[in-house]
Length: 261
Ligand code: FPP
Image: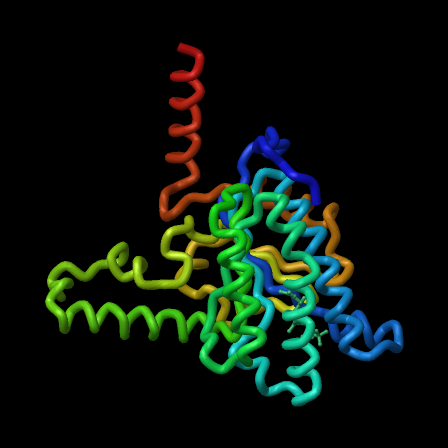
């Protein structure tokens, strides 16, 4: 990971401000190679490293990945424990590089059940990179989109109780201020590897208008080229936000006319 001082010029006409990824397929990748599932997860960390680099190089400013869902506790105890150890060791291994590359790390999800060791490593990574601005990298751990919304509702109600928020003023923008990643743009591009076509309780609110990109490629094989393919696909999408295609064409023409003037 190189130290990027300047934002590179983008090769895409439209770049997503925020990309979210469900990194699925580690287990199947390992099984195909007659390896234990843990080897798939380890390879998955390697893939994540390359995607962080590709995202930085492409000029993406926010990347949020799903490392462990609230439902993943249902996996065999041994796999859960291997994943937790992998989180600690990977953060330790890559933190200096991430820091140097200008990446700001944030972890979202319910941390209350994590071991002291993991909790300390998350805090340490966040504090070491808090002043970085090149890429916002958010890692969701013990996260669920419904949990996020319920937490937001609970915290907003505390403010209602204390009188700092009036129920009459509650609307979408106010509510979204209580969610994880409230300070970041909404997710423009949602990517899921591994062939499943599901959102799986990831960033439900934040993905309300996302373009959804599904690929059969298993996460450890999802490399820089695959990521650029997804960005290319995104750049070809017409994002209407409820308007008609004709309205968008007119807006584009008027923008182009103003540029010429
Ligand atoms: C889903 O594949 C993957 C996970 C539950 C774990 C993802 C974690 C990583 C890639 C490591 C990230 C590391 C850090 C430090 C954030 P799966 O096991 O469900 O695959 P399968 O569907 O083929 O069984």
